Length: 371
Ligand SMILES: *Cc1c(COP(=O)(O)O)cnc(C)c1O
Image (tube, rainbow, N blue to C red):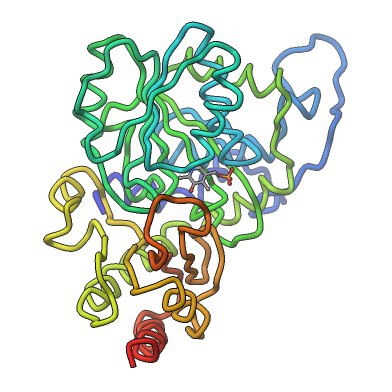
């Protein structure tokens, strides 16, 4: 970790202390309220639960501290992505999306933006720079892409998009602010599904939009207040609690993934393994240049659908589940979710288990299918 990342991690747990009065609780209080005492002028304090909430403020402060930007929170990752797009594009605009990113983002464009007159194109993450960005109001990238873990040069994309007068939005869900810092690389907006590693306990859906451009933040906040898709205070409180251990969890997950990817690659049952942290991976050189960590997702192929299902089912330390970023290691055969991958393609999401125990369980399950 860089010194600034270490300093952000160290001070995260103490952000609220400057405002403490004697007798205040050290942990964050949960404020469940739709209305607040509101005499006189209607500015400068909490008034109504769709506009603001003290528990939200604490989460936005903590996320803003990590992103080094202003943050607006949402009740899911898709709510954050929708807010960024609906607040900033209009009829007649065209946007560019990754063909190999999270599929619901493309569904949003196809089913809801297109009928309103917003056109979209798609392009693979690995060749995002090919063809340029003329005519795009917004370019949306996800790097590493999910589930194949291709990456694109975020600095170069940001420069080229800005030269054409567009804005760059980066979905940083898989990396978190501790793994990759798209705003530092020139992106205008980060969107994140905090449902995943940021909350980290698989018990809440949540999301955020981060930007250093005050006009963008004003638009996105206005969208939330007006459209009304707001996070529940209790969910926000849980995410605040998750954030307090993010650095420890993410460090463990990424370190374990590096160990397990190296060993998996050498196993006779495994082919086509992708992990940006492995020397020789198509993403490696660029990953070293633009990412702080290599993440905790690994993808690979087993011989067939049957073998992939058996590998997941027979492993005592892998949960069969969609999604990722929780304390439990989980895996999924992605073709069953409609990703354009072979039937035996597995996405493995490393959790927080001790790495040698986890590897023993993974190896035992692979040995069983390899015979
Ligand atoms: C899960 C995910 C989303 C959507 O998040 P939800 O909280 O499920 O709405 C968006 N982008 C990526 C990369 C994701 O993994």
